[in-house]
Image (cartoon, rainbow, N blue to C red):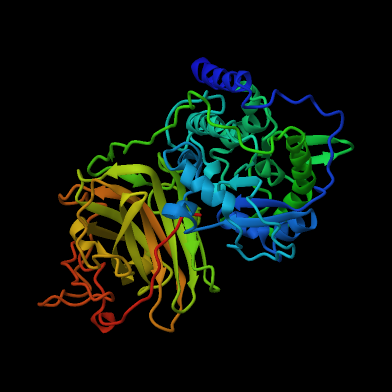
Length: 555
């Protein structure tokens, strides 16, 4: 951490102590106590899909285990809270939760939450009052951190080692004002891709070993559980054993050893159960350490309150016309956590999307999307940016498509606007015969995208290429029919609006001519002229069918 930031935190703490607003640092305990609390303690867990699996009775069993240890557990999930803040749990988003002008409002909601927002059993009665413990965790894409392992903290909201350290240093400035609450950081799960694994390992080692000491943090109301390390090897641990806390790291084991599948980095049930077994004694220790020094009431506001990190609107990052969005050869595109799969979890729908080496148009890898969407359901493979992107210098998108069979239908979605007012625009593509035989180029212009029919101003043309927040490949269904298949996408680029290079130009004649008058798409929207030889044009026999779809949320 830089000297100025460290000094700011320490001077603020010292002021609070001198004024008698915070207790002095507690003496180190002679022995840690891994036993459950003697009374029921309210706890809330901020998470997304991997946390939901960890809590689930038939997966990680964390919800049941917490209850057995005298914790009345509640949680947040997608769509939760003021401004749907529950949608945003990536590392940069913790500034919004804990260091923004809305922190007071969000924390009031967190402290008062008492509901079950995921599928787990809860047998303890609600003891009343506020949540005393706040657990929070980012999902596995947050283990794809750019930069170098030893990068020092630096201001920013990109997915880098430096920016991640900065975020966690900043949120300490809120935690020291709430010594009456225990904040438990759960590190993000690992991924299977080794490209950025050394960075993830270094960052989580920093959180466990250096974060609090570098900031001279003097209180016991902040703790870290290294979920990442536990899941990287059967021999890696973060647990209480032989009377002491053990943090065992096997050299070179930095990737997931408990992934759910070859293309799914959600931790498996075995990994989650291992984490549950190791976490509960540690949580009990964290609780007893904190309880020994926690005041009965929160500290009053200091005479000179700590500065709040404001997040002014970021200038959109410009993208060059004709440049690459993702060739799927290296790690995630800059400013993103990589491609993430989302699905309607109330149905049997499954989707796996990740770069794969079984097929490629250029280089050695492409984005493989393997989906089985239940009738009247949805799934997406999504790429979100941490800040708005200015794509107005280009005319649209270009990518190569290979399909398991001709006729598979999917959407290309664009997310625009701002994080708190996101808009969805889409265009529907049917895989042409050429894509089943090899690689077919798909060229789309911005004027082909229209506002999603589940949002306000349905059908409005896309007019915000200067404020793009992300894009996705979306899968949904016709009424009462499933949508099953595989597609591969490669060389996703911006279109300059000029004639594409020879390797991108469509080959052959259009497979179907556009109708003379405006046809209707499956959403009742006019089908604009297709610039890619008819490859993205919908067959007329499907033109009047309606499909059901929900917007995507981040994992």
